[in-house]
Length: 113
Length: 114
Image 1 (cartoon, rainbow over the protein chains, first blue to last red):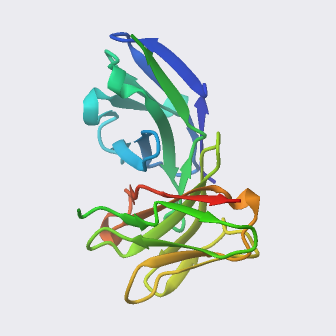
Image 2: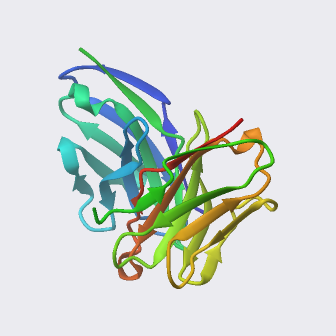
């Protein structure tokens, strides 16, 4: 069975500071992992995905994530936070049957000016 | 706009009425997924469909909820006899069979039951 756990439902950072959003996964097979961002009253937008190629994945808006098998982690980072980064972020793992995707409970990012 | 299209964006229903939510997948996509997002919660998988087939409905409530994806037209999520607890955002996503490792989401349909 596959699942993801997002540590910290709310994260606050100052503008210009490092953003680190944590995600740990559980998977019995090599996982496909994803980060999505959701702005208020909108759908989810794909930030980046890991599909067993390079372990460091670069996405849109300056975000990147590193797949660490030994730690079963896929944390999302951005060197310098912008006000426009304030949103809800979801980590997801793709199941190995039925094409189902399993989402974490989300982390709300607040950027303080 | 070639993205996943959902309508209506907002729907208000009285208890006991029926709600129908529609989803047109991205062009070329033949796989559709429905997710429900309750306030302060993450996305919960409901159902996964291909054209004319329900592949996985393990997340669908046993009663009142149904989904279809006909050969022609959009996918429809139908909720009969709505209750207040059905108030949520319902998101549709789609993928291409050959690229099923990524799903793309629509803007969502917000259902409010009064």
